[in-house]
Length: 316
Image (cartoon, rainbow, N blue to C red; front, side, top):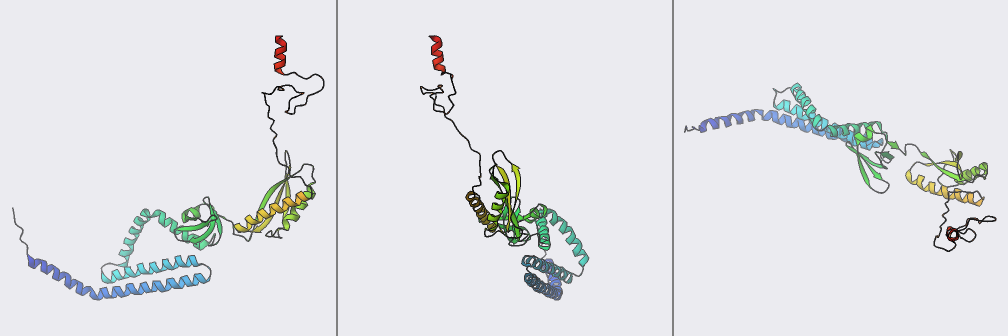
C-alpha cells in the first residue's frame, strides 16, 4: 500500500496565503460593512417616514407594507453594493443576472405566497374596502380587522376570526355592505283579499317612518307585488344605516310597528291553515252520518247506512 507523504510546510503556506489575502481585503470589508449599515439605516429612516406619512392620511396598512418594502429593498441594494466592494471582480450586472435567475426559481417555489403578496399590495393601493368595513367574501361575512400582504382578517358577527388569502379576495367578488352610508331593507307583508290596498299601504309607510333608525330620505315605500292564494302581498321597503347592528335591530322594530298598526285598524294578515279530521273507526257510530262526530253533514232524507249494517242486512 502506497504511503501518502504529508507536507506540513505546504499546508502552512496555503494558510499564510489565505491570511495575506484576508488582510488585503480588510479595508474593502470595512468599507462594505459601512455601506451595508448606511443602506440599512436609510431603509429604517425612509420606511418610518413612509409609515408616518400614510398613517396621517388614514392609510396605516399601506404605510406598514410600503415601509417594509422600501426598507428591505434598500437593504438588498446595500448588500449587493457591499459584495461588489469586497470582490471587485463581481460587477453589479453579474449580481442582477444571478438575482434574476434566483427570482425565477423563488417565484416557482413560492408562487402562492407571492400571488397573495401582490394581491395584498393591490388591495391596499386601490382600496376596494378599508379596515372597519363589513364585507362578504367566500361565504364569510364580518368586519375587516386587518389587511396584510398575505391575507385579510375579518371578525364574524358571532365573534370568530377568519383569515382569507388576498388572492381569493382580489380574484373573487366581494360585497362591501358598508360602502355607502345607508342601506335598503325590505319585507313582504300579506293583507286580506278584501282589505283596501291604499289604506293598508298608508298604514305600513306611516308606521315604518316612525321607527327609530329608519331614515327619512329616501322615505319608506310600499309596492304591491302579488295577488296570492290567501293574501295580497305588499312589499315594504325602508332605508337604515349600513352597518349590520343598525340594520338588524331596525328590521325587528319595523315588523313590530307595522303589525301593531295593521292590527289596530282591523287589517287582516292571513296565513295558510290546515284542518285535520280524525276518524275513529272503532266506534259504533262509524259510517252513520246522522250520528258520527267527524262533522260530515247528514244530508236530507235517506243517507247511506254504515257498511256493517248493510252487510248484516244482506246476510239476513
